[in-house]
Length: 386
Ligand SMILES: Nc1ncnc2c1ncn2[C@@H]1O[C@H](COP(=O)(O)OP(=O)(O)O)[C@@H](O)[C@H]1O
Ligand SMILES: [Mg+2]
Image 1 (cartoon, rainbow, N blue to C red):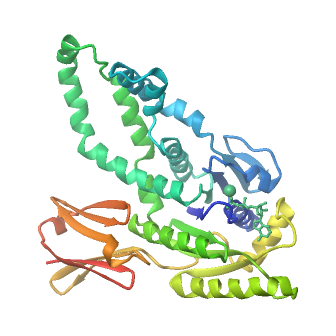
Image 2: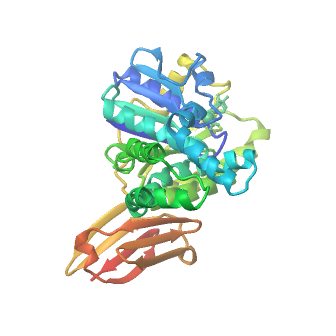
Image 3: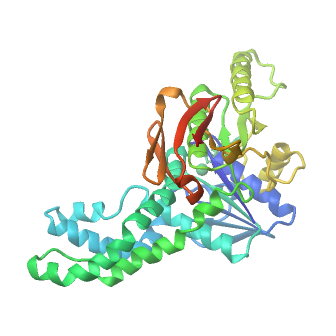
């Protein structure tokens, strides 16, 4: 089983690349599903076929699906939402506010992960290509399983017992709505549905992230940040795809200047993402919509290679023994010294990079050790345990 996450800034060509990648893999005989988690779905437009919330066949070996997050929300979170909304309502929020508060930002996207897990465990497909939402949402989505696991492990086991014990007492004392078993079961059930998905997505042999960029300054800057944060959360990037490169065959003086500008950005990508595969895709002279055009695009992009293959072996996370020490390394390319912070809190190492934070729960072998220092050099954070 392989999973490819295709992400990048809005409009760079994510959907086109995801669709073409899936198509190329299907042509090679991989049973492929391409699914979109971007609420602004455009997979159906890319293939020029109608698509829905469940996998629909596009051609032999290729299904496509556009996740309807609102529907998933009802399905999995309905009961919890109703409870939370009663609770907020009781606390004095107006009905509409209470309803909105009961769904936290990113919640709807999270439900796509339940589908990812189902598909990776069902054995119906060899390859899952995920056409992700623009980077900010994708990062939030990819960091959520970790955050949720943290809450569930820390709070929930106690929460359920606590609730059982205090529910009768509290309900005698106050009119506050108390979560019933069905609510707790539904929280637990949902967590069960997505638990384990992180292990799949952070296993570089299974999952690779592909960053799509255009040869433009702002797009590349954002891709560098994405690369850093993906590293922080342990997701392996295997390729950067530079899309909409002006071909050399264009000799119009108007575009000459643009070609020079693009050349500089292409060089930035070559250097900045040296450890992963880098590919270019020209700006075609028409919109690349429909199976035939996507197939052409795929051929130019992968040049006969298997689109499902792991295009580079770079891995963000390692633990190694060096003499008596154990060193944990984390690739967070482009991170600056001033924005990285490492602290130990009990049995966890908490790494902060800019606005993102990840808590590493230490294995027993490391818990007994002391953190002797953390060093950032050339985009790699090394934490030494003695
Ligand atoms: N290399 C390319 N040459 C020509 N048109 C392209 C190319 N890449 C993408 N497009 C077109 O640009 C538009 C936006 O691409 P899309 O894949 O939907 O971007 P995103 O999913 O990142 O928002 C689509 O109409 C698509 O056909
Ligand atoms: Mg898209």
